[in-house]
Image (cartoon, rainbow, N blue to C red; front, side):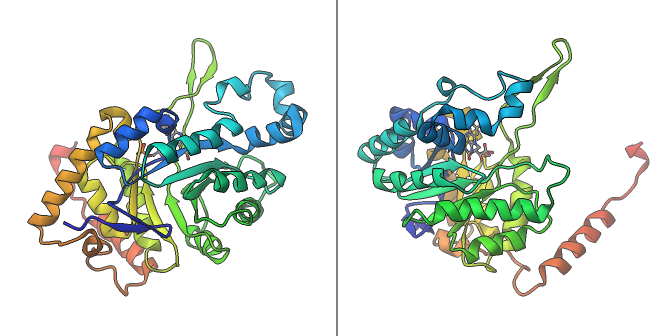
Length: 335
Ligand SMILES: Cc1cc2nc3c(=O)[nH]c(=O)nc-3n(C[C@H](O)[C@H](O)[C@H](O)COP(=O)(O)O)c2cc1C
């Protein structure tokens, strides 16, 4: 069975990519992921704030968040709380490159344009095959318009993209007034891949202590549906590869994402829950499924969903919405 796929200019042995997470900080874990069948790994993100602090002293970092510091001194993580500092991150890229054969995708989380972006050059020199830029920014200011926010984000992405000669993907959140238009702007500046989507970590409140509880929760397959919808809407309309991230837990989740138009899927929660060997199971189950359903390769599966070719996405969306609402039939037992 030909399981190969292309992503960010690389030919991968299969579409199972390990998504950005602390798993890559442990070299032994990276080897286990490769042995289990991972096609590539995305490292956890290094934050713009970490890079700025390193290059321009901690004064800059504190000024950047001066208000936050005044109001809540312990708000920002201290350097010790981050998994790896900027130099250690580069060293980890080199160590992973030496330890495994699969491609290594470095990840940066950045939202402003500036000198810090030069760090991306060091990522290239350290040997990363590609960069994933996580543009996580929540609109919280009353006066900042959607347009401004998008322009700032594009400027940040551009400033990193200018520094690198390796493929770059951008990891997006789902909250744009027009995701297709934003995706088009990214394709226009030469971004080769989009990762759909970032997962929002929604903090809870502890009513006893009246404090915010930062929570990282594990996803389930329900989260996949949002990704499937947007991958299907964007697929084939832009010159970018698509990675599905969020809610990929089973071989059927992978198959659905590829049918909808994803080049690869990224998995984190499922691997944290079941360990690296989950990849081996998923791969075997996929092969079995493809054989049973007469697909000779992943490439044949790619975009094989019926009824999407040539249909105006907006008309399709609206029609689907009407169908869904009409499909609900009231019965006495529902009460
Ligand atoms: C513990 C943990 C750490 C993560 N760290 C990062 C990170 O550093 N950068 C990033 O872009 N995404 C990070 N993510 C998000 C994942 O890459 C992924 O987008 C998200 O978990 C959804 O995929 P999943 O449903 O397979 O978990 C992290 C997720 C978890 C659970």
